[in-house]
Image (cartoon, rainbow, N blue to C red):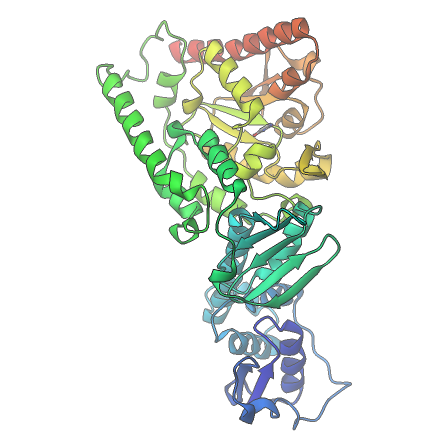
Length: 486
Ligand code: URA
């Protein structure tokens, strides 16, 4: 029996070196025990692979996909992971395509482990909350987090990029990560009692969360999946969740009561005087694919580098039965933090214009051409950057899959980036607005982006352009009404 002692829970290089040496010496997986140095009896310390001869010229190749999966799976908390990885390495030597057999138990396990690790990394990006300490001397920001897996070193570069200007520490029971503005240092884990518990940032977080909380879009189950209860205790805004949900339930039941007297209209009924699209969306047949499944898949999208600095993927939202799909450019700062499209200033402008055009946003599917926030940090502010063509192309798969799942009758492209993604080529807005374009069997309306209106410095121009924007949206509403009246 060979006992291999790794230097730590995340010692991929140590595992790789030992695994290579053992495989070249034909040591079978069942003849190896893997341990980690921490807290291990001295007795084992000297054993490792010392007694195996090095085989410098010996070599074998494994697919790069294995290396990628192994680097993630080794961060899983399951103590059997080192043995699983060695078993797979052993088997891959004789069966190079093994990783393509999804039904193989070892393959399924390494894929599930790697996914769980990336999910945990994503949760850490989203749920770490810094508290300011040592204000009188030099401010330092400290967060407490309890990761499910050994992901602190993996997740830390994200915070270094995001909060490049502020010194921070993320304390966890496993290890702690520290950033001094230049480099990340990793130290031993600490007890929760060492993490600060209150400060002035908490109130800011709470009021921010209350401001972006939209009861009309509340889905408690989805929210709990995205923000599992175990993270709540370390989130300043968590104390608001219960009252906000209770409040939303009250609001919703009031809405249901007031709607109860309105009979549902059959599909071919004459359009109501009210141009709201509410009735049209009820007439839709159910779509085949699940937006929830797409959203989950997109949460780990790495098709372009934008995921690295963004907090999370902001996927589309709205009923799967919607007849209208609105496509924006990309999430902004607020959307990136909240995880929902169009909840910031451009979203408010859009909501107002939709209402004036007689379109009920709750019945529309709202998404973006690019699903991650692209920005450059300027001090504490994140300045929006327009996505480039490779980024738009990389993200188009999600728009295509949303389109296939929703099957809308009309797509409204808001601004040049959306038009480029929806129509598959650069499309000038002014020359193409004001009429519907037929594209791949779907009607498309191109118009300006609401943030263009927000940027106009002159009040007259802003009012004029806003009216044109509402007119464009009315065109969409009118076409749908006529289509359903026919
Ligand atoms: N701008 C967009 O294009 N999309 C959003 O979700 C927010 C702002």
